[in-house]
Image (cartoon, rainbow, N blue to C red; front, side):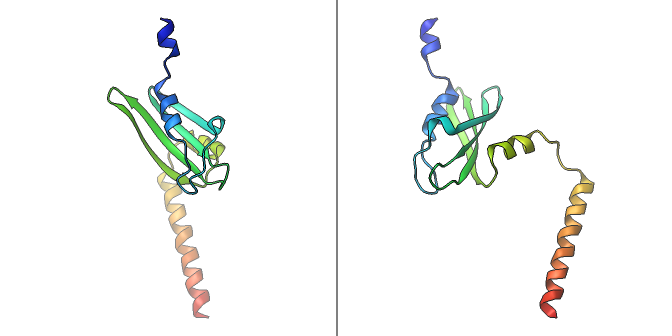
Length: 115
């Protein structure tokens, strides 16, 4: 039983493999890798580069075949990701209001270019 507790968890191995910023190639600091959410063997992770300050958000999943991950650059902080993750989906009314706002702003920019 003691040998099992000494083996690293799959997420720890996944985090160890994420050791370099994709933008500046700087080394990530191990203590700055934030696991924001865990669901079974899937983990939502946020990491900010200590050198260029770009951040990535990634989902790391452990399965019987190994580890897989998908990530993206983001301008969100770890607290932004956590806050937005726990909000519900946007409603149709909110989406339509956003559409109208963008349409209105686009028209005003076009009209100001004409004048």
